[in-house]
Image 1 (tube, rainbow, N blue to C red):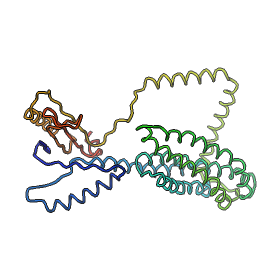
Image 2 (image 1 turned 135 degrees about the vertical axis):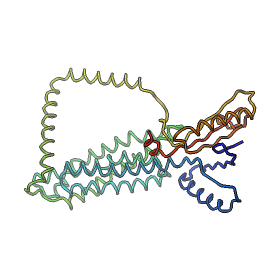
Image 3 (image 1 turned 90 degrees about the vertical axis):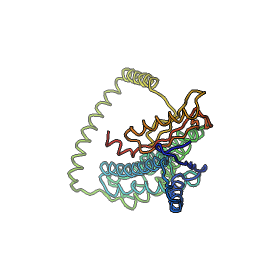
Length: 359
């Protein structure tokens, strides 16, 4: 037997095929059900009490938002430190160029836009501008010493080409082996790792090809003019911390043994703390729904199971935050088999923001 919130109903479970787009499947199902609902006989209604793609859709929306915020914050940091809008434009163009290239690489590798690949892109935003910042900062350094932009860029590239290649190879050496893991772990990390690796490689290619041309064309010789008041204040504060840091480093380099003792103590403390931390395969998340298995003694009849499921209905009806639920008697959630002494419950919650507002 099956009931929705204590009322008899008929359930239809819909599952996507491997490789299908879950959000597109959910949208298509809603359209089909809406069209069929217009032809239902009087007294028959439909509802979608459980839609697992709502969590996926909300998560992807948050990831897109985080991706945009990360890009804006990166550009603000670059502007504050380089203090030249022309210098900001050069690494700023790196983000869209590299992200577009990353999407092309994902398509070539057969990846979809999902939580893993989008999270990889978020982490990669800080990586993709690193190479461009190295090129721009070194070119600006030579321009400040009186060299023309073109010659300054050529000299800068001769100095940073090796480090850029080295940085990229280090990143590839970290992420590519992670994509070779087997089993479910490899399936989880492959798209994430290869997305970051592809983005880092494209960033390096961009840094040694497009960025030098932009530096030579867009950067201008330094002029003697008064800087904006915020930049003057930032330089004074930054200069203070820089001098303090330099002074501390000069003292520490003379204290080799104490520094290594402190370092060893910190490593030991980190290892001890790591061993005491709880471990798990996948973190627990509030996905907006819950599955419950009801198990009675082996000799319990279906009538007894129905009585227990009624009690479950009463508990869920009194629980704040539960939007709707379905109970299925005679189905074991543990092994998906028919059993008179078992039951399954699918309950969906109110939207997360509403539950948070209610406390």
